[in-house]
Each structure stands twice: as structure tokens, then as C-alpha cells.
Image (cartoon, rainbow over all chains, first blue to last red; front, side, top):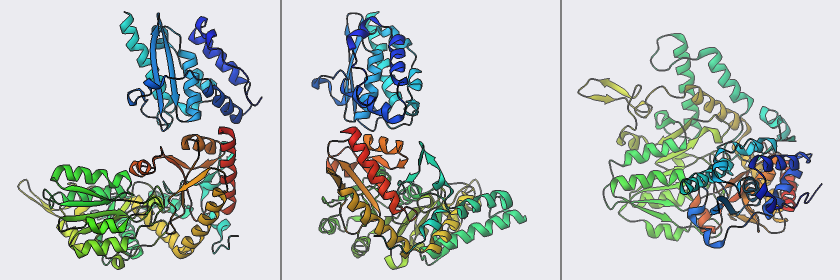
Length: 155
Length: 408
């Protein structure tokens, strides 16, 4: 169980809805018996995070409210929004990787309307508190704000 | 081997919270520099107050009010005795250290002129930087900073160079919250007084470990928070020399702080009430007194000696971990260890430690200038109290090892 269970295939996401991807993530996490396995998996997920280009790692792209630094960049490819990101902390990298896996390569409208309750289901509920230092709430908000901005552009 | 002077196992029984589990593991509480835990005697004092004599103080003729007033004022006397203030009205109840600092900063606004200088140390908590910046903005005074060195100590030669006839105030913490460094406040106070400047010492981090004697220190102002020394949150004290407290204007207007009110003019009450507007945290003040009783019964010398043994043991064990670096490497420090592991983010380490039931603080500890000095995003800070054990140090070290393995 330790180590990598799934090598994430980002290409798959192209055909899946946000809800389907979230269900897939929940399925993967349900295999773990304890927090250590979940954390180890998150750390592995962090390593497969689609990396932000160095030129976008600017102070403007840092998400506020996180104890560690998190940079996120978004750009439109066709009618879909693609996210890249990085963080200086490994666990935070894992968390943003999970979010990006669910939300990247999706239409802005779908991102805006997406539910985020899957976070509870994968046992990361503790990270959802708005005062939590890693700022998971801020990350979700930022991804949705990008979607709102690009949706306006598409209209 | 720790030759303890205290019966730690019996002391631990005084703290109900130490029995709890966190994430399935026994709690190892090493965030004492943020807040200390509360012994049963203090909890009992709180329950007793609300169960038996909860009433507003200083103005009621009825029995409950008189009882509450008596116990509250007894608490003030306990604080006076503990810090060896000459007079009980030199002790002002506050909501905590930050409140005390702001009270003094606000008062000095009426004395300062453009071009006057305020000196702060590079080791300050944000709460001891921001009020002075605000004061400088209001008055045109200039903020000067005593620099620090890599060991985490203030460079005293530079301090002496900063002092001049323009210096009106010097502010420094007794102990650094981020690193645990004990500053040479005696030297700071004497040198400031030689040029006629006043000194405020932030004793928040010192008070749980060192019994400060304000008369011996000859300090003008000394501030602490009860919650760092086994008391409740939301209460603290400002000690001020009588002559200074008489000179400072009131901070807040309201009930309690007035002598006579008409729409034309209000005269202010005498000390300490001049600075205690509104209904105070009565229960908090009483519980603060109970906390001092509790700690004094154990004894500050014994506490300091035992905590120093814990510090030495923990430092040695942690430094055995490959790639671990401790910040603030002075001999004169309290039981605080601020550290990082090469290549790892403090937040990651803290998250794993929490999962293992070990409570530490991660981040910049409200002292960003210190982190900037070391060019690091933050540290993991383990801060010890007299109720911590050598076994808990072992759990911390094993947990840090485990986090390192998981994260590397």
C-alpha cells in the first residue's frame, strides 16, 4: 500500500467531468487505512503536480492565507481552463495537486459550479477550516476566481 | 540524565488537558510559548467565581460585589508581590501584553515630537513593532532598530550607538518568542536611563520562566499575559512606575476610570482605575492570581532549573538528526527550540507532528523580521514548560525523525 498506488494520468481528465474525477479521487483515497498512507499518497500526488512555468512564479500569483507559498497560474486552451501550480511545502503541493486534478482542463462554467465536498470524503476535512494555515479554502477560492475571470472573457 | 528537582508526574496530574489524546496519540504539548496549559487550581478558581460570587466590582454595596472586589484586589496584590512592585496601584489589569503595549504607546503620543526617536530590538514580536510604527506615523518620531547577530542575540554595541538625546523610549522583549533568547535588559535599561529615555520591557515570554523584580530592574514599564503562565486568556498586567502612570493620559474612556463627570468636564479616577475603563475581566484577574499562587508554590528557581535540563536534553537529541539546524544558539535562553531540517518546509514537519499528537508551532511566530534575517520562511518551534517530560522530548525526536523519513 505504501508508495504509489496510481500514476495519475492527466490526459484522462480531458474526457471526464469534475464530478467523475472527484469520485475517482475519493475511490483512490478509500483504499487507505490510516492517515499515514493518505499523507504518503498526497506527497506522491504533489510530485506529479503540473508545474507552473518559472516566469509565472511571481508574488502576484501567490495565494494569500497559506503558511507555505503556493503559486497558481491559469490559462485558456480552447474553451477549457488549464491550471499549473507549485508550492514550497510538500503536503501543500499534494493538496493543490488534488484540486488541480479535479478542476484543470474543465470549462470555466463547470469550475464555478463545482461542488468541493469530496475534500471531506478523502479525509482532509481538517484542512477545510478557513483558519487552517495551509489555506485550502483560499486555494479553492482562487481557482474559482480564475474561472469567473475567464468565463467573462469567453462571454 | 535529568536529575529533576520537581515531581513532574505529580505536577502533570494538576493539568486535566494533559490526559487527552490527539489523533489517537497521547498529547505532547510543546507550544507553551504560544499559551500554557491551565492547572486545576486555576480552573477551580474560575468555576468558584462564577458559582459563588459573580458580581460587578468596585461599585456595588451588596455582599457579592464586595466579595468579588476583595478577591479581585487581592489578585492585584498577588501580582504586585510577584513582580515586587512598590505599590499595588502600579499594577494595571489589561487584556494582555498587546493591550499593555498599546496603552503605553498611545500615552506617549502626547509627549513625542517630530524627530524624537524610539528604539526597538530586532527580536521583537509583531505586537511590539506595529504599535511603535503607528506611534511614529502619528507623531513624526523615528523608529530605530537594535540589530541582531546569527546567534540570535542583540548586538549591544550597536544599541549604545543608537542612544542619543533624541531617544525618548526603548522597547525590548525580555525573552524572544521566536528564539528564546534572554536579552540583557539590565544593560538596556541602565543605558536608556543614563540619557533620560523610558524603557518598556515585554515580559510575555519571560514571565513563565523568570520572576522579574521590577524595582531591582528599575524598569519603567513591564507587561505580561496571564495565559502564558498558567492563567486564562484575555487578561494580563501592565506594571508602570507611579510617576509614569500619573503622567500618561488615560487610554480608553468609560465607567470605572472617572472621578466626576459633567458634560463640560470629566476628571479621571486615581490609579489604577484611570487605566481600567469599563467592567474588567474580573474572573480572569482572579484566575491570574490563582495561577501565580500555583507557580510560586512550585517555585520559579526549580522551574527554571528543570526547564533548562529539558532544553539541554532536547537540543542534544534534536541536533543528532541529520540536517537539523537550531536557530538562536545562545547560552542565555529559555526552553524554546526553533529549528528547521535542511530541504524541508516547517509547515510539512508541523503537519506530520500534529498527526502524531505532538503540538508545536510552525511559521514565522509573528516575528517576520527575524525570519527575514535568517532568510527562511519560518521554523518549527518546540517550547517547553515545567510539566513536560524527558519522555515527551523522546517522542518529539522520534516524531521529527518519522516526519523527515516521510517527507524526504
